[in-house]
Length: 455
Ligand SMILES: Cc1ncc(COP(=O)(O)O)c(C=O)c1O
Image (cartoon, rainbow, N blue to C red; front, side):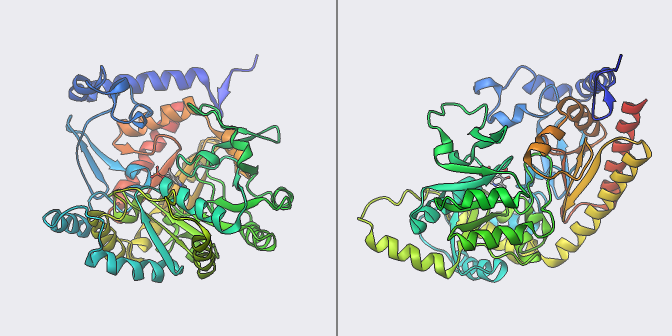
């Protein structure tokens, strides 16, 4: 009888490895166990934010400090941090120029709904870096996407958006749709969702040009919103020519194109867009743009700006439905300016690219030697191992490639060997402060856990 397995590893062995790693974790975190083991007082379900329960460890460790690519917990453990706040700290923890800018601004007021010198400097920096002429600042990538989609609907007068199956663009309601057996449905698990979101959105598989052509032909889509690489399940790269076809078909049908670079900014200083010469109408970047201080940016073309002014001129006075009070606050703009001027540099990206290449090659070699049916995929500084054969073509394949129990065991084993990787996918980010020694540590840890799994 065939043994049940996941990613080429028997479930029995995965269970044994995970149990051993849990014991090791508990032994190494006595103080954290005391503080978080029974939940933190005052919080629903014991954590200030539910993500904190979604890691592989039995209880979260308490962070004492983090600097560059290194994180310490209150139990005296040190980690090479390849999670980096799930990209929020893609350029390292508290980069010196950002920390100094925050300290400077801290004494000058934090938010007042008026521009500062930093705000005046940031506008032209965004134009120069990302190549679009008009920008707005928001606080999260979710907000930036919501506002950009609102603009897309306003200027096209069309009701729907189009997403690729398996996408994630933050908690933007109308993007929470999925394809099941070729049919669009609300994404499972949504709480309090009374609307049929498929009334607002069309869904197509990534890399499916014919599907996209068919859905856009309805003429009711305001905007295609996509990442250039599907990053939020297992990573899916665009097939050659796919993004060109997306641009061609959107233009041909009067549909706007929104590129969300929140993860793919790992590609280069101007994101995947600049490295690969994409031509979006709307552009969104959140998370690391202010070095870890909450902030996001969204930009658009002259054509969108002109049409937006026309719509505004016809719209009665009232609330636009866009904006949050703390958006574009002085602290965020100080941190953003420092990040753009001194942290997201070409030199920093050269380092990130080189070490990410080393990491990817090392992991793939380990997988090959152990003959595991896994693969490694990379976009710039963002590396991912997938516990299934590749390359993956679309969101359906990406979802099927997940091996939750196996991934949990691997994550915890890496953590117990001093390497932190992202909890929801097998993402590893290299930042400007990451060292070759840290990459080697992760490769050794990966070799150790894969050895344990195939034993
Ligand atoms: C591609 C993409 N866009 C937007 C978001 C939302 O970012 P935030 O949670 O900061 O709003 C995410 C979050 O992971 C993302 O991956």
